[in-house]
Amino acid sequence: MALANITRLLSTLIAANHILHYHGILDAYGHISVRNPNNAFTFFLSRVMPPALVSSASDIVEYRIDDASPVDRNAPTGFAERFIHSEAMKRYPTVNSVIHSHTPAVILYGITKVPLLPAGQSGTVIGKNAPVFEIADYRLPSDPHLVTIRNARLGAALASLFAGEDLGTNTSTSPANNVVLMRGHGMAVISEDIETAVFRAIYTASVADIQRDAIMLAALGGENGQPGRSGRIWYLSEREKRDIISQGTSFYLRGWELWVREVEVAAAGPIYQNSLSSPL
Image 1: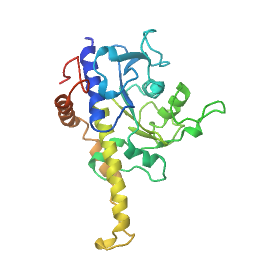
Image 2: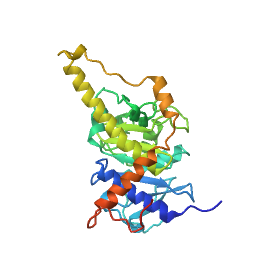
Image 3: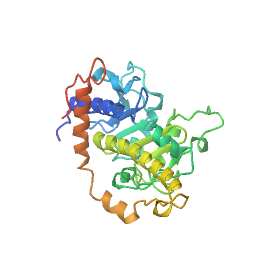
Image 4: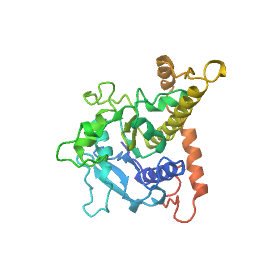
């Protein structure tokens, strides 16, 4: 089997950092990773830096999936929350890209009892559900009371919620959910490739915005547009979700091509530079 072109892969990873910043999914914080296609036991993730400024192979660090340690002992400082990436890839062989973001639109659903639900076709990007990871349920007495994932134990607990309905106890290695919300902290998104992960992250934020606005509109306008609190929201049925998901993800590439061109046109100074050339 021919080896994958790592330069092209890293170019795609750099572009993904830029796209996620351009669309407000990442700001100065957050990160996206990709599994090494030539070594399934390692993954690539940028060093600690703003996503919009990632520009070259020297900004990318290779990590071991087993313990999230850098392959190169002299590697630059890495993200403390790289365990989100390593533990998701460790548990799910089909997961090759992971995103962690602090997207404001989704934080609302992690700090309330309102579930994030699909109301339109794009809503199926979340998968079966978008469960909320409550880190307090997994802390040990010795753990600091932070909401960040700073060790493999907490990373594994978060990864377990991608498995399905039996939150935290399902041992499946095939994820049913694509998105896990993190109480007071944002979300984690998984996918089989970078392009699909980016699409899911962008549209999860869109789903959250649409649902929030629909809830407010429904509360203000009742039946026949009259004032009141009897307004209804039509979410996708289970059959609709299943049939939409069955269409696959190939059409996501249309968005990816546009988004790459957007950041290439927007590139100025150190922002959105990609020394490895366009991934298209």
